[in-house]
Amino acid sequence: MLLRTVDPTEPAIRRLVEKLDEYRKSLYPLKLTLIVPPEKLKSPQIIFLAAYENQQLLGCGGIDFTDPDYAEIRKMYVEPAARRKGVASLLLNALEQQARQRQYHLICLETGKFQEPAMELYQKHGYQPSKAFGSYQENPYSRYYSKTIAL
View 1 (cartoon, rainbow, N blue to C red):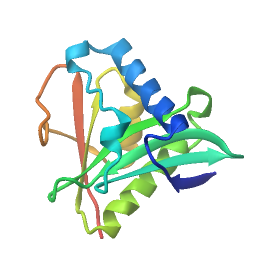
View 2: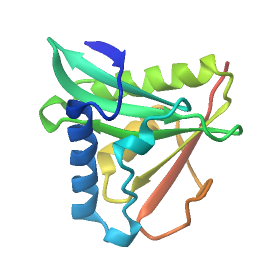
View 3: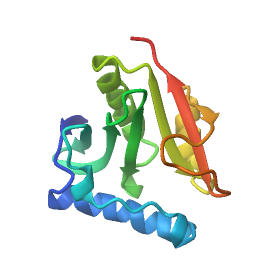
View 4: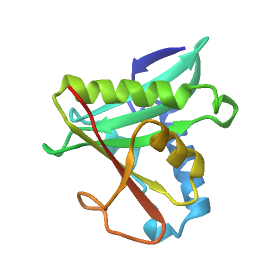
């Protein structure tokens, strides 16, 4: 498997982000579903990675360094056929490494209560349930996690 830094607006990556958004819209009330267009993910403060195997796109994820106090995992998504094969773990480890390189000690993320595989992944990697952070508001559907990382 190969990871590379990608532009979230390139067509194949855009489709993955849109698949994640559609999936979340099918699970949660629209007013609580954070839809962030790929154009807003294209920023010097956001690193976006994609996983490939034999040139086939398997998944993507980003890490946002906009806040000086924490990095935020954004838009993690793995194609259904590629799940349970280590793609998400590979992406998450690489995103954490990006945080270490930038001297961030804290990584936060938001996921939904119906996304049990995502919550299992984050907990397996040492993320602990936490309170809402940044501009997020507590709501019955969101689950927040954070992890302190060693540099």
